[in-house]
Image (cartoon, rainbow, N blue to C red):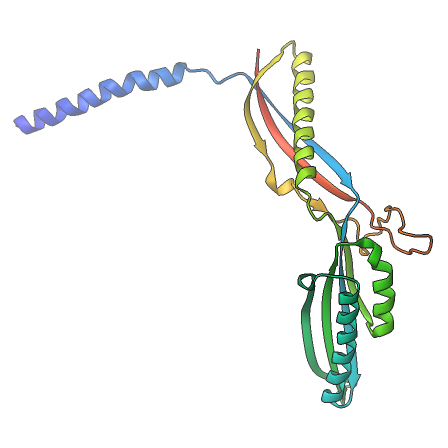
Length: 238
């Protein structure tokens, strides 16, 4: 009996301490804030290019097709080295070998195909024109993609981020003024990290070619890379 009375006393004491805390939370009002988003874009001329080049070889003898393919790929690699491309920027990204059949109801073996793909990253865009022309002459018969990008976008991302914050602040000031209020200290700042990226609009898949040509004979322009930033900022109202 005494144990039950002691247990009841403990429960009563706990409830007595909890009730004031809950009451204080009920009386605490939500801070008066205004939340806005700010976004910014910076367009930058690319300084690097990624070339994905391929060689397809066909023959009724698989070994002969492989020898032909290796010969042309070797020429491509030699051209890239001669253009001063760092070996770390040259990569064989795919190699496939297999039979080829006709489209008849009962397919017939036509021969074999050997395909290799090489990705070359150019850090000097002035080398692009000669490398592409010489690669085609050396036997490259497939261009899977050419992408232009910014090698070190960090400083542009920081600039875009600061612009986005300024946009958010100006937007908050205008909205608060319309309500007869002024903004105070920032309450919360959130950066949308998944929005911070390079827009690879400077490629041969989307026709955005605005970069000045390297020479009067050049047939390529790298376009512009867009660096974006988006932030959400909450300010206290005064």
